[in-house]
Structures are given as C-alpha cells and as structure tokens.
Length: 403
Image 1 (tube, rainbow, N blue to C red):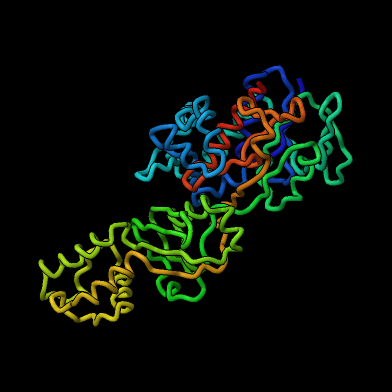
Image 2: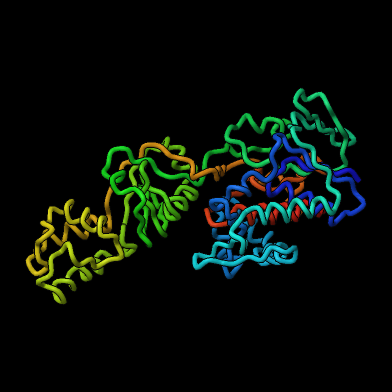
C-alpha cells in the first residue's frame, strides 16, 4: 500500500507515524512544502512545547474546543491526553503538568518533542520530502498528487492524509473544495486585543491572576489570568474569549467593546463588601497602602486615580460615591477594541474542511475514497493550553489507522 501524508507539522508527523505503525508494510511518504519540519512544535509555549492539557475528564477536555468539541469528545475516547503522555514518555520524553493543567516536557525544551517525532518516523522508515508543496489532488483509480515547485511532478497513492494545517484564506483551500468538500471560511482564532486609545500601555507587563472578560452586547465571556501589553490585553482569558468568539469578532471586523472585571468576582455586592471591610479593619490606613484585592501596587494606584480618590485619603474617610466608582472600575471597566494581534507565533484558524464532509469515525472524506484529514485543516480548533496539539495527536493517530 502507498500512503501519502501532506504536511510536516504535528498532525502530519503523527499521522505518518500512525500509518506506518498500523500498516508496517506500506510505503509512507510525508510531503512538506517548506524546508522546515514541525515549525509550530518548536515555537509552542515559548519554545517549551505545550504538548497537551491534563484536564481530568474527557468532557472537560472536549469543552476546550469551540469548534469540533462534540466530535473531539468521541475521538478522545480512542486517543486521549493520557495516551499522548504515555506515547511520549514511552519514547524517553517525561512530561509534567503545571497547576493550570498545561503539560510540558520535563526538559522544558520543545526539541525533546521534535526529536521524539523525528526519531520515531526515521525508525519506522517514513520517507520525508521537503520543498514539495502539493498543488493538486486528482481522484482517478488511484489518488494522484501533483507536487514540487512547478507542480509538474506527480505520484499515485492508495491512501492520502491531508494534514497541512489551516489556511488564512478561503481560496487557499480551493484544491479541496474542487473535490466536493465543503469549506468553512477560515478566520483567525487565538488573538489578543488591540486597545489603542487607553492608558494601558503605561502598565504593560502587569497581570492579574483572575479576570472576567466580556464582549459587550453578546454572551461571550471568559475567565482566567490576564496580561496588559503595550498594544492592549492578552493572557489566557483574552485568548479563550477570542477563540470562542472567533467568527462573531471577525464579523465585527475586530471593532467592539470589551468589559473587564479585574478581580474575577461577578457579584458586585461582594466586591463592595470587600472594600467596605477595609474601612472596618483599617479605618486610619491610607488607601494607597492597603490593597484589598490581588492587584499590583501600580494597578491599585491606577484605580484610585481613575476613581478620583486622593492616594493619601484614609479608608475611614471614603464615602458611598468612592465605593461606587471603585466597584464599577474593578468589575466593569470598558475598553474599545480596534483590531487584533496574533498571539506570538501560534497562529490558529477557525474553519477549514467542514465536519459534514468527513466520516466522523474514520476522518475519511465522504467525497474521495481513501482521502483522510487530520489536524487544523479540519474545522476543529481549541483554546490555548495544549488543546490544539492534542487535536493534532488525536486526529493524526486515528487518520493514520486508515479505517
């Protein structure tokens, strides 16, 4: 059997390894359009590689996929985050889970993951062809791939696994739509918010441990740590919000208002009560010297200034209007978002080959027998934290079974 895998990223490598493992006598050829392999794996997690997420249940793990979550819940029963961990550890790559459930190699170096994949592919005898972009797939008695810089070279295969990642442009997937596949329009996911007209740039680098971020006028809401950058807001809460709101925010052309709850407490009365407790316990202390929430000193002073409270004012001298202003700022500050910025090098797209175009149990095309899909080329994407790599491992492994 002749098997081709298109794409030298995480899903492509895992699909090629799976195909050769399940069909050891087959010829497996991996095509990569560039001269680099596993590029996203190398840069993920700041070069540490966030290989998966250690959510304790498959339901909780599947909840991290704004698109494709229902299918992922089924597929994860066949190759889960636990299976991913076992796979790498059995090949000499121990891993550990952080408190936030992100999983990294113990080496804290993505090269450990890259080496494990490269070594396994080499050991199994997978053929790798660099600088070989696929320009066309022809569905005849065999599946013909046209490749190379001129697109004139061609080779026939019995099975083909498409794992070339997402495309930022709809026309970048014409070669698949021409075969009958429905393509969900690709739009960016996992991006940060640009907030040009605010004082936030002054506080770049500061973070809060638990924020709640909401898109005004919608039901979109996310919780988690948040980071102030020189262009606006980032961090897990913002990235999660951008992921779940990818399509809606694209429709808004990334021009919307975001509401920030800086203290992670949705009950405004409790925030008020926490502020009031400072009056009871430290009435003579200056407001600048007592911070009732887990906020940095600079951020706390920012809120006092915006609430028009003198920094040397004593807690016991604050009135209801001061508490109202502080509570409003801490729980419901408004920012006008004007555009987005890609989160580091971790570009992720929402969209791709519609799940209605594949057989859910095998990931095989319903239009072309012997054509399979894995990874981000499918309309499956996850929030930050190892979810997208887990989707790559899971779909790659199952597509490689060629069921």
